[in-house]
Structure formats: structure tokens, C-alpha cells
Length: 243
Image 1: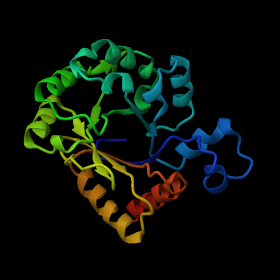
Image 2: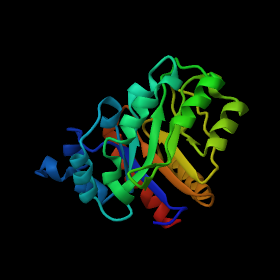
Image 3: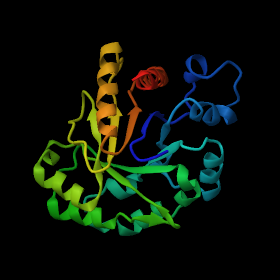
């Protein structure tokens, strides 16, 4: 799909309550990703935040999804949950070299999420941005950062990310500030409230359509009430298709 595409998705695909609300009765777990990918534009992989995965697993995930689908991959906590980010070069290299390239053109952005206690240190954060590679195994990489501390709400941080070619996640949350701003060719929104009523979904559809004029746009429903996420994602996709 071309730049400017809008991809709507959820976090993960293996969640038992979805077997009663999203997946059809009797669907084998081995077919859940294939089923979800046929109905969504993207999925944010959370497992990569906790541990490295094997290249053959990424290859299986790639083969289970259709052309145009994208996986967003959550960066390792061993890269972001450290006192000195600049000391994470080996961890970042290990993460990006674990087999992400096996996803090929199904690989979307890498999301680097920071703890809510992590404050903005211009020198250290600038050093972290320099650690992020532009490719892995010949596959281009794009990066998104999601800080969760109010100290990042400043022009210096946004200018720094923009200069590095790194997007800043837009958070719709009761718990964390929304620091990101659309622009730069990639928009990445994480929608964490629940429920999203018709009016709210209409609003996000309008925003997504406007953002897509600037570049590729991702919206992920990742509310703590996970049972609601697939229905919200599919409802938003329907609204976008009607626009």
C-alpha cells in the first residue's frame, strides 16, 4: 500500500476472551493471526517488548498475513528501561538483529515505549535516537518513540525527534500525556480509552483522514478493556471506508 495509507489495528492477537467475541467458534489458535490480519490493517506485537523472538517465528507471522498488512513491533524493555539510554547500543543492535528482517515488507514501525518515570534528558535521549538503525538485514526500519512523562512535552524534544526522522506516538489515554504531534510522513496513534462511542470514532476517522494526507497513518486500539478493541478497530475501519 502507498504512503498515505491508513492502517487500523489492535495490540496482539492471542487473547482468550476474543474467542467469544471476535474469533468464530472453534477457530484454532494457529489460525487466529490469519483471521485477524484479514480483517485489520495492522497489529502491534507486544511479545517483543519482553524477550527476543526467533527468526523463523517472524517468518511464520509474515506468511500468515496478506499483502499490505503491517506488523508494528514493540521495542525491547532492555533498550528503554535503563537509567542511561546512551548505554543501550548493544541491546538495540541485538533487538534489531533478532530476525525483524524476516517480516520483509510486512514490517511496519518499531515502537520504543518509555516508562512514565523516565524524564527528558536532552543529551541522553539524543544519544538514544542516534542508536536507532535505518535498516536491518536490508529491510528499511522506521521508528516511533512513546515517552510518558510530562517533561517531554516541549519543543526541544519534538524538534529532536523530527530531526532524527523519528515519529512521536500520539496517546489517547487517561493515564499518560499526549505528547506526539502529526507530521513528518508517519503518524502513530495508540487509542487506550474504552469504550469509544460513535462520536469518538467519527472524530478519529476525521483525524486519520487528515493525517493520511501527510503520510502513512497507524491507529491501534489498545485499551486495558481488551475485549472492546477488535470491535472498535473494525468500526473505525468501516467509517474510514465510507469517507
